[in-house]
Image (spheres, rainbow, N blue to C red):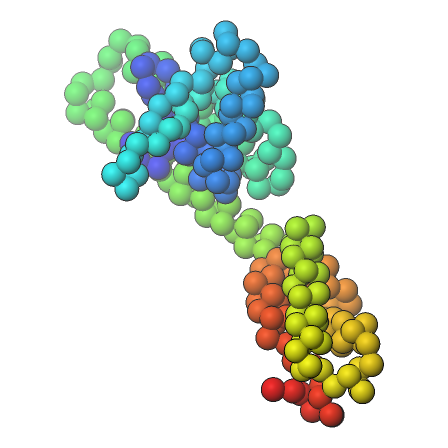
Length: 233
């Protein structure tokens, strides 16, 4: 079955690190790091029962991944606590429950004939895929909503301050600033920050949205000061 959050492997319901990375919007290498950290905390007995190392193929090469039981999944994602992550965890839990029920039904004596069994399995497959597709759409909407609200994080603020410092010193040292007008680099800094805040209609640069970060960095790199009453070339 395609697009499933959980699946059956060796008669056990599991998910894998690739699915977790995709559904929680994380880099797979970071999910692998989280898994290995939790395996270290949990100890060998629990890890051997609940974390199964495996591989997947991409671009003709083999890369590591892990298959996780529901207990292992719960342990790894316990700290993912944004609104989006909590909704995703709920969906995973529901899918683990649904798939376990599915396996139990498969193990019961078959009261249906072959045709009825095929139709029942097709219906379950369609329902599972519809649920996953619906969840992905919900997550996309949550991400879109967050993009409209999230302001610069600490690392982005630091990168922006560094870019402003670099730009001001470059202009000053290359004599592309009217030093009789600005007198000191402090006045050049003030002019750049003011132009930046005006461009993005914020009262302080940390309030610039994350989605505008790259554009704002390009603005800084291309900024020119006023030179003799006009924008310099």
